[in-house]
Image (cartoon, rainbow, N blue to C red):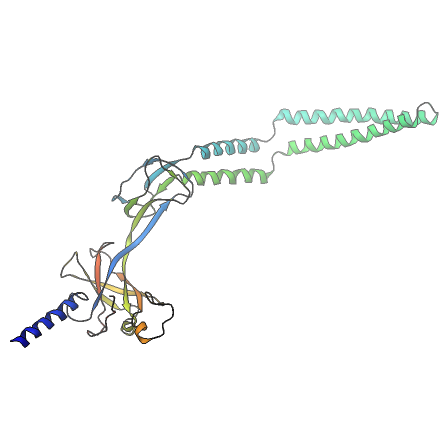
Length: 317
């Protein structure tokens, strides 16, 4: 009788150990959490939160506005840049061109008079009526007026030619940059998904790149599990696996081995002994079939069918 009781206790103990690894007899299972792609939605332009258009838990679609930011200084900069571009595009006013032309005509008349004066000064110097200094001043006046006339002609030609095309392109580029920064003040959803976390409130000042919300995107789901390295000989890319979730008792889902990490984790840097090596684990990413009811955050157990039922367990799994 005592032997029977002892045997029953041993069977119960073995059974309880099996429950922690798998829901059913057969290959052992490992636990993981269903994951999905998520995006930290932010703005490249900082500003104050002016309005929020969604709440946590809301479904969002591509382009749906999550939050509006306010940055009055950017609006002022755009108005200034737009005014500058309009001025350059219009070019010089007719009055400015006429004024430059009148200056050229005036200098031409002054130059003619100065040349006559210089010629007379040279003649009078020959007869000793004027000094050499007076002659030199008359000739210097001619050179001065020639330089002023040349500069005035260049200003006149520049005004007639209008604004340089490169300057107009620079103004357009500056306006485009400001338009892009202003567009960033509207923080929108990148795709279909669920708004999981709203990180700001109306009135908060948000810096460039600071997350405004976290959106879990609709799309492929996966689960990442960790297995002992002794299992790797029975697991290959593309293998079909069985997935069971606590939310769906008795129901099995299908997955596929999508990635096997090349480096071990949860192990000392330098592995020297066999006892150390059995503590190594490797991450495995299992892609789940879409549309089967699984959701991000669910806890699941993954079973690898090719794994022997007596596969050695990791002491920490």
